[in-house]
Length: 297
Image (cartoon, rainbow, N blue to C red; front, side):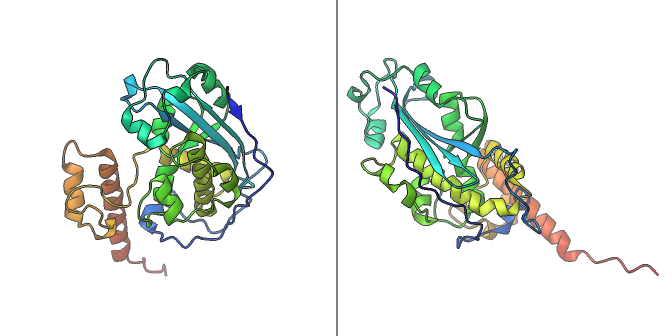
């Protein structure tokens, strides 16, 4: 059976105050440049509800994998309310759960007996205009739900480049995220169950919104930029390999960034990040040597 549970009326307003997290302006610009003033961010005609979704799978390669659990909640970007939680186990159609996946999410093959088929379960979560997930390319590829998609992992890299790590539970710990208004629903569950992760991701997206929306013209501008960021490679806070693994990008030499861009077969996220920082350094250098034109007589 598909289980749809409604959370009570607890609301959380989205505050517009800046967070204490370290902000690197070379990461924020140009996708989220500052604006002089913050106008009315949410006109009535703008969409404001995002369906935050998570899937758990049997743990195989994409062509051999199967979805075994789906969970979602809706987030109203206007009020910050997280509501309409939904979750269901899914019949994997004969695909067995790998031992590694079973250790992570603790779902067994026996637990899936009597679960709805994927097509039936998927239909419960269809119909949203905007979806969000922590690694959106993964969830989108498994679900195939049409609509606009936001990736909270890539957005968190823009909003919180200074935190230690950008996995979901790392962000919960290091941003940190306030899970107070969803704590009752989290009780009895654990990370890597679909609804648990969807709830945490919704709180993350709410916090990202708090950080980035004041830098945008309005809600439509924020969503357009967030969708653009989500479709691009990730703008890394630190490289994950090589001589400068774990080093702040500001401290990585320019010649290394240029080498990385030229080198064939490099990680797409790393190349995208190197190009971004090279362009920023060039822009900064040009601005430093620019001189104002003399006033006309």
